Image (tube, rainbow, N blue to C red; front, side):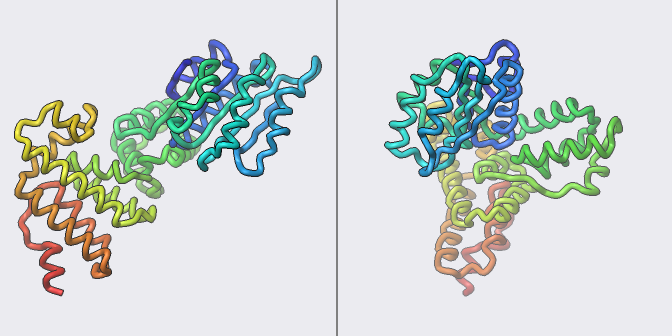
Length: 346
């Protein structure tokens, strides 16, 4: 089985077209562009007919299987796509999927794809058999450094000249949303081709289309990036992320940091115990240098008060309380305000 990242797919397709492609990941633009690349390569190889199906309860399996068998000497070669959707695959559907590997032949190219990880399929017999015959394309949400690299490369491809502050502003407004970033870059390429563009120019019309996960909020907190952390919190709340989910993750991180502080010398064993991979260890090291055990005890007390007050309906503005908790992660400040005082005063 050949495994590729999305940015490696183009070079592979230029060499040869595989009989099977398994395209899985949760980042929409990388998935869309990977499928477009495969379709274009297939057309160039004579697979001029394309049939698409969605795995759902009403899927006509006979129609799908018929596409594999309906070829003749005068028929076009086919690209058959099956979107596995977002629902859990039922045992009956698994049984049908097991039939597909035996139907493959030289006049068919099969693409299975889904906007989710391939983890839940990877141990099934049909997935293993298809993997052995083809290429698995995998992609993941980009971290901040990868996203900035992507912006630079895509701007260059479009002939755009963006100064550093323009790139930083675009990253701020479209972080976690590659599709929005692509749209903005394409508009800029039409609006100001060949010109050097700075942040002031972009500020005139950029809308905030960034999209974050709670884990990306945690990264900003651990790194001590106060302004960025508050921006990510604001976007999470605008995405209708439940405050209790955000607070739970904050409590988990504060508990982990306190455990690391109390362990004294923090090494590989401690990081492994808490499931912290090497790539993220520098973030925890930064936080441990800023936040003492006493401060983390105070932070955990504030988080516990938030949890009780939110669940009992005592917090009229939970978003303000969350912003307060976020700032406590950045660095110790004078305790002129605490949720504990607020609740006690009520």
